[in-house]
Length: 570
Ligand code: C2E
Ligand code: MG
Ligand code: MG
Image (cartoon, rainbow, N blue to C red):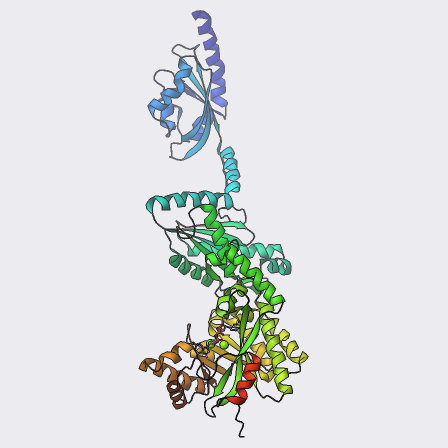
């Protein structure tokens, strides 16, 4: 190409472009290849940027592109200058006169028909495209219902947090929150209501957490929380706060819906050092949390269904319950005033050929965690009720106490099942007392109260077991339909050495009497303890001093041979 022809062409180019620049709503720029100063700028560009033609002629592309330094921009355009490339295309931002910015795509060419050469830039505002891409990214990483991070983003953040914890040797806790009864809500009130409940849980949980914590929705009613630097103790405090803020029911179509959650916690490094293990262990913890009255559980290897020992024990207990291998021993309660047996307590025993007699304290937690507590309790009740029927036939006048597990009180069908068993064996309901530990009543008052009232209405006696062991509240007991209170063994055994424990036992007996409750003292091993209890007007006493728990035939022998047995002189 000759110089002349080039000049002519460029003239016609500028002439043609002049029209375009004047009228185009697109952003088109030409700028000098040496000074980089703008030469021509389209109407669309001027309008969009807010600069006049004159103002723009004092500026270079660098004044509009805050992301670029001079050297970076030079590096970008030099292949065009050297004619190595025909076009350069890149994404960046433009800054308007008022300081606001918008994302753009730039197509840059060099027109070497000009002397000096001129760059032509065609700019496209890509705000919409960016928004769309952001939306796609958001959907890939966030849950659309709750706007919380989803499983993928959680994995990513947990990986990152774990690396930070490892580097700084600080702990990290992972918490899994499971919304209970979501299925029920969905089927009773519809999926829309289920969604509203999930959204509400998400919002309330988020409110409890700090900026640096992450809460993600996994699926359904399951959420995972990452608590950087938190120990299990701190995580437990947060878990309780979460349960607290969820206590107030959500009102949906004039109906209050409870948002109860079970929470499981696993901590780095003590429960695992990889994201997979921590998540799996928090999952195991949340499963056992469902069997806790507090609905809260830390990871415990014993609960791990993958632990061989636990699997074997679970399978054995399941079989022992269905084969009715678990039996009952009976321990008398003595009437302190008369010095004779008044009733007996049924205590579960598991005779295992390999290990001898196993204590209930060692196997009941596994029964609870395996979801076997209902069949287990019904088996013990069946033993006790059949025994009551047999004794009644033999004119042995006794009442029996059976222990209920904390989980039993959440089973609203249990009272009717017990009543049916009693009726089947023709035993009067007043012959059965049900012992309940107070911890469950304190942690789940409304639910347990419902079951307790049902049991009371059916004519069963209720007894508060192990009183004083956990958070005790005598005033709260006022609202319970119980007739008996058993003071925990720890106070009774400490009584002979400690003035303070004497005071506690004495005051408990007085207060319980004021509330109209009979008092039983557990764990009497020495005659001096009995003397004190008599002095304090305690009603009943139970302990190895009188009799250990015995199988029924040995108990019958004891009833007629022990001075604490039946008053045979009467
Ligand atoms: P608990 O209901 O408070 O029962 C009293 C426990 O104290 C029994 O332990 C009994 O053997 C023991 N004991 C009685 N007198 C004395 C004494 O003078 N000294 C000492 N050191 N201990 C005494 P056991 O049978 O091992 O039962 C432990 C717990 O297991 C029971 O405490 C009860 O909470 C639970 N349990 C027992 N049987 C059942 C059952 O059938 N169902 C449920 N859910 N729990 C049961
Ligand atoms: Mg008991
Ligand atoms: Mg007890």
